[in-house]
Amino acid sequence: MKYLFNLFLLLFAVIPCQGQRLKLVLNLTRGNTYNMVTATTSAITQTINGQVNHIDVTVTGTTSFKVLNADDSLYYMEVTYKFLTMKMQLPEGPVSFDSEKRDPADLMSLMLGALIDKPCTATFTRSGKIRSVNNVERMITSVLDGFQEIQGVQKEELKVKFIQS
Picture 1 (tube, rainbow, N blue to C red):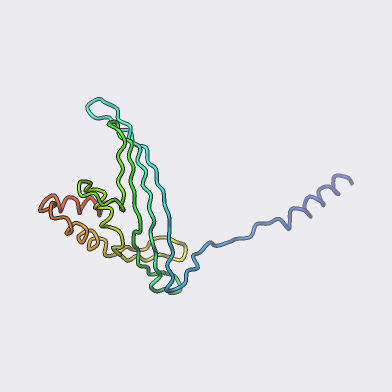
Picture 2: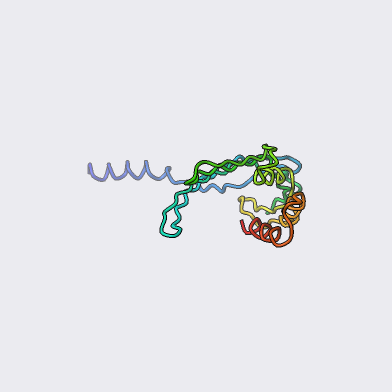
């Protein structure tokens, strides 16, 4: 009898504890702008000519998403970078690049700075998955066109590398 009573109490306690299903979705408003701050850290180990190299890379940035339109299942957004930095710990020592740095001798920082406020468009599902990204090539071409020292084959190679990343 005591066993049945304990079993009954256990069932009585467990039945209301069933989990509820919750579907996480974005609830964004047309016309509003949402900022996302990211920080990505990578540790890279390479062996070159028998020498092991360790490289630590940290990329931080702020990306702005303006909701242009929305329907039942998709958000159409304008995406722009607002701030970008890259810090690398190389075997030779630390190196850093910053979109706000305006040193003409620092080409990489100038390129990061040229990406700021250059829009591309993207389509996201309500769950936040990227459906498509458009106008990236135009954005990259615009950035590279601003650097007269980069021409011809070198410009095309950089463009391909940017698009692949």
